[in-house]
Image (cartoon, rainbow, N blue to C red; front, side):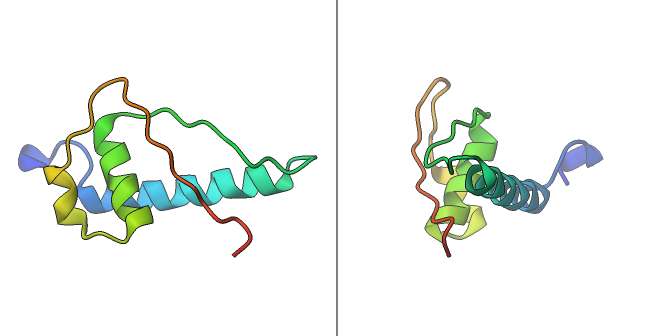
Length: 81
């Protein structure tokens, strides 16, 4: 947790990222017809952690990445395994 016990820890945000990517992948695959594109909007901390997840980068490294407000980040997720 953050200093003072407020908010989520990086690990908690990472767990939420994993759940969100899995849910979005399931929604895309279950759509009729299956969707190959989805849009998700989030704040920079969540995006940094999501990018560490999909790039297999250590979570601690994400604090070094600058993601500006209003930036566009494209992530390809293989929903077929």
